[in-house]
Image (cartoon, rainbow, N blue to C red; front, side, top):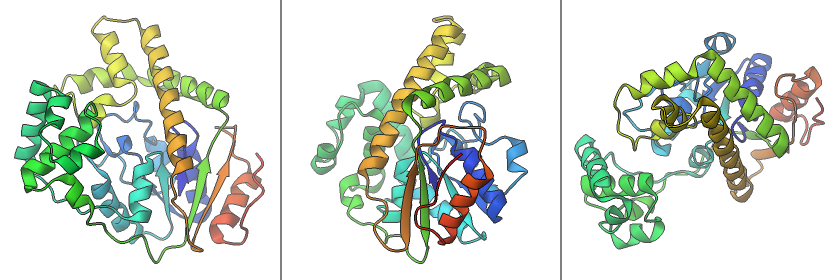
Length: 312
């Protein structure tokens, strides 16, 4: 598993490891599951995908929201059908769902989902929160529109609150030897990488990509509508801000998000058995992965060392 914050170099490292080990890269990033925004979500390029097998990238339509339960099932299916799976992403909840298990919540159905989104738009998140069952409401913040809408659609579609379903959890991951590499670059280096990456997105056509995406007229509450770059470039396309202002907002929002990502990883207990190990490395180079660095990680993955020397 290759985990870490946005723009930390996960995809490049996962690809290098897949090539060195003959592995398959499996997406563990919530936004990269969707097919519409390859540039903005920083999905691997077609050229990178040709160098090693890649799975679960761009496999869902934006109008069909993904969740951790769906991803866990899809990831396990891919893991069981490839030689060496290398899971790569920054969505901590996905890694937790895979390792620790997840509640078996039934699919509430399209009608319940549509009604929940309608009421969210009509009433607002706090009012919709007030309609939830008490146990679920206590677990959610009234202004967390995405989770409140999800909880209400479950209540509406299944007749039972989300909290009750969450007590029914799948088993932990068993039968796998897990090695997790957690990238944690210095903050100033990461911010520079975020800025450079977004500049490259713009040069590659991100504005036109967002223009085409927004022309689909999708529900504003869908996850992909909030991908970093979509709200900001949307405001630019509407003439509300300049491209420079949009760029500054994207870099700031992405950097703030990376802080939350690393806070999550530092406080979650993902590895707690002899078959699961984790290393954390503060790499500072995003484009040059030395042979010794990759070799050290290969030895770690193969179990020949517990803590490899990681020098670039």
